[in-house]
Length: 387
Image 1: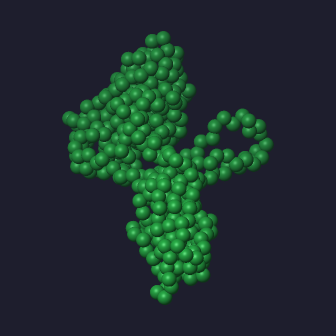
Image 2: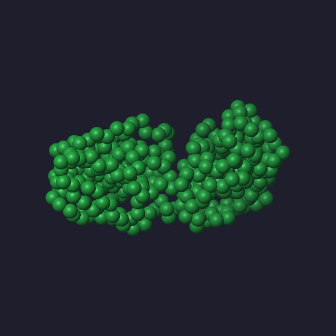
Image 3: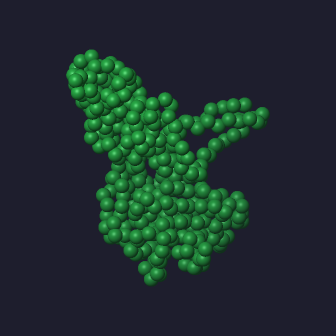
């Protein structure tokens, strides 16, 4: 049986459109003896609200997008898991690639509604791991001046662990040093919050990466059930590393509109550029008479889109988005235009999605399938064009 399941706006956007990112102002090429007319593009977006900017507001979402760079002490890393992702809400350097895994490199994909509020972050989600014997948290610390503390909230189910050991490593996890060997839960009732914090000021932590390892233990269980190492569930929330960096290099949100306009019969006649984007805006360009291929794409996110290094004609145009920029709002338009004089041309941008197609070849009862989990293994190897 074959079935198409799931449209995701996350994973790699493989679509169409646009120009070299380095172009930052309108660029017009035309024959010198041709009369150019003023064409005003009235840009409208299909959705009136940017999901990306809404998610990254200070009311429980990631604070990164609305926070200016800081100097001095602050959160080097913070995970709320409220966006159901193991990507941190805050990281001191946007280029850093921290990770959370358990047992033999398993990446958590389950997020439970039993989360805990912390400062401006709502009590949304927590990361949930079944049968976790060891949990590993890798945090790059290049250019970090000082590390002050490490803390998190933890809970477990009735048969989950009620105690753990915690170790740290500064040699990529090859060797670990004990930080605390007894961390008995104060609250052993199922799904009850326990908070732990560890001062790191007196420890010399230097290098490229700091690893934390939690080794789960049965612990004193009170009225909880017997510890089940393979089926018990442990949940973590509000993981945070506090320290000092010379600068907290948070990228500013990108909110740009790219346009690419090609004359159908005269390859040398074109207008390309990138401008600041707003949901209702006008863009004016000068174009000679003729038929044109018209391309627009807007990007509201933390990361730029990927374009070919050289675009000479309409057939060269494509763009792609990284898996890691999965929260991006990307809208686009593909169409044609006839220029016969000064005119206003409405442009409606529609949401661009990526599609994952999953085909089932077995003859089993698919109604028994409760969940499909798609996990990123690498950034895309190549980019494609639909033209």
